[in-house]
Image (cartoon, rainbow, N blue to C red; front, top):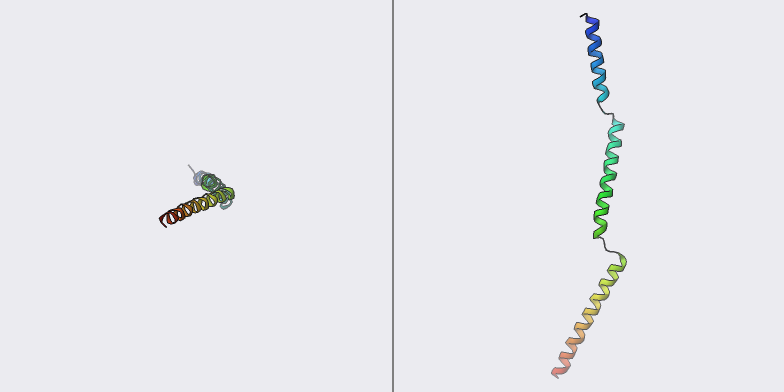
Length: 82
């Protein structure tokens, strides 16, 4: 083999290997896509745990009803002791 043939082989091998290395733009695109997928996945999981405004209102109503019921019963106990 001549020196030129060896250089051509090495050159073609290097070109093919260097072309397989991802560029910065490609890496950024892949990272953005993965982050979007992860964001959607996390949001759907967290969405199940969130309380809506109506849920919070119902919880407050139930708490106040239970508190007033308890105070009413407590007042009746005091009145009955008199």
